[in-house]
Image (tube, rainbow, N blue to C red; front, top):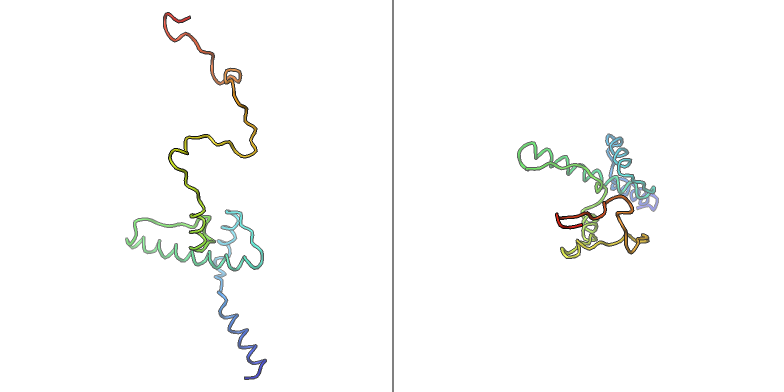
Length: 137
């Protein structure tokens, strides 16, 4: 095969393998990006759009099946719509779940200036202690 013919065939194969974006979804894509404050560089835009479209098709297929009684719940696009399943699993695995005993402990925000004590009476949030019984002063 002639080298230029081979190169043309290779380019055609690569171009045909690239996912074709559904132009009818442009408005929904831009609306979703605006709602979730997504900005991508030129290279990332196409990849994220492709993932988003695939997720949208899964959601629409599921909801169609729901209308036929095959599922007990519906699905909707959310802020994870541009993530692959693997990326979403990574997001979930990065979450740190607190143990029950750790939940009741106040943890000051980083760089917060918190006084060692506060007299809420001085701030007007509570009143001074008053007599609690008939014989108390």
